Image (cartoon, rainbow, N blue to C red; front, side, top):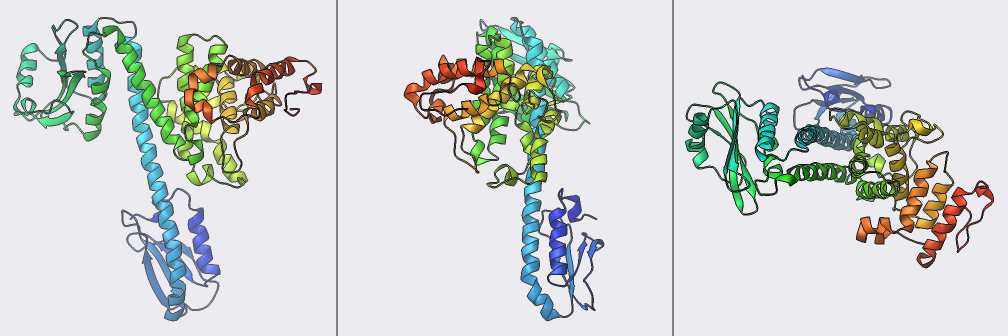
Length: 490
């Protein structure tokens, strides 16, 4: 017996609607389930209410509705527009929460795929034997989708045949390869079909620039559950990560590219929840790399820092678009929910066995050097280097981007504002590294045309401003120093 309370995460609006109908229209209102049983009751203030009418909730499944009672039919007729308005508002909330659940489910599926890609990439790094790489990939995919058997048959570096198997003999491979359903398979797409024996076969082409060069096939024995649409989608990854060309040594890089592109796609999906944050995660990642390069981090750490930058707002999937895009001041409860997004990020990323520094950067970028940040109140060097770097990158982009409640600040004003928070909010070394990156045009090289969207108070004097800002920031008596060149004191 389903009811609206089974599908409505936030029931406050439901309570407010019932209170409005009861107190304002003097109705007795009950929430009923799909079987007509009362699950929530708001009695009228007083009086006999013999006239009754039921109104169904509009949802993909039967979840009941409202049962309203009034002194007479005329009163119900007069109240009906108000009742239907409340029903429409509840319907919209149900739709939003259903979409959020679908998005969350998709995030979990993507998280699983990210974890798979990362684990495979770690296992094949440094291996230049194509056959061994294929063997690892075959075993990993077969294990992920619980296939009983499988094989990869393709061409190698010099057009030689490469065949790797998972719990199969060569004779069994030949039998499957010439199975009727595979002979008619579309070589450009992953498909599911059944063999003459009743086994479920999952076929995925292995492609190169000139077309298909081989196939990967996974088998589930007769009597087992056939492969699902999700498993088909999952195995479809193989179309993008296996390249049977002569560039064997670049196989790991291809996996890393796909992994990073998937991370970018996730970040873009989060940014898209709010029109004002479009491209935010991309810019934060690039700002972070500029800082990391200035701090002379090695390529491995820079790669991880970029991933952490893309992932830093992943938890905003759990925050309503109405809160993210609210033009006015947030309520205390709304701000508290916003503050939870690093915790949501942590929950999403925990199943993925990422290096600690990636997780720390994504989760700690709202911590402050003086310990007053969130979500954990870390202080000083308790905050990871990645967390301190992304904190600077995140705030700089927020200040120099348009928001519902203000216009984008000029770069000079943003930097002066941030320098006011040095040592209490931001790490001094990290902020100085960011200013140095701006002085060396490292940012312009990384962002290209996106950098053109930044506003300046006096771009012709910008380098001199950065020199003076650096001197001001490094000065022990910085509070008494004045920055010139048309700027105001920080």
